[in-house]
Image 1: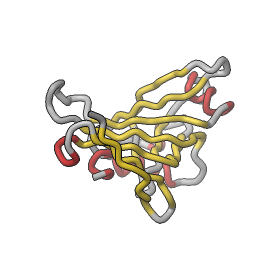
Image 2: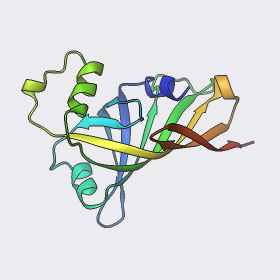
Image 3: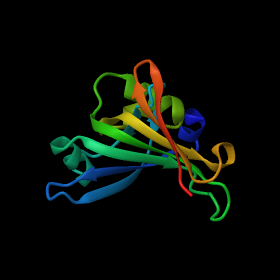
Image 4: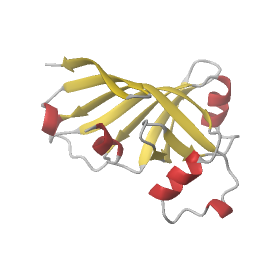
Length: 150
C-alpha cells in the first residue's frame, strides 16, 4: 500500500523550518527509492534549500491531487531529514521516473529526504479516518500504531 501511495503523484510537498521558526512549504517533482527516500532537484539559493542547509529536519506529503471531496481519500505523510544528495543514486532514480529528464542539461544539485516515520491513509482499503504509522528502517517498514479517528 505504501508504494502505491508514493506513486499516486509525481509532485510532493516539502515542509521546512526557517531561522525564525516559521514553516515553509514547496511543491516539487520527485522520484523515490525502495527505502522511501525522496529525491528532487533544486536551486541551493531557494528558501527551502537554505532552510535545509541550516536545519535539516523536514516533513513531506504525497497525495493524488485529483481526489474529490466526500469520496475516499488516500495519501502519505513522512517525517525525517533532508539535504544535498551524495553519489549517483539520485540522478539514476530521477531519470528512471522521468524518462524525459536530461542529466546533461541539469546544473542544479539533487536533494534527498530520508524519512524516519510515515503515516499513511487509504480510506478505500483501511476505512474512513484510519491512519497507520510506521518507522522506516533499512530492513523495511515497522508498524508503530493504527489510529482510528471518529
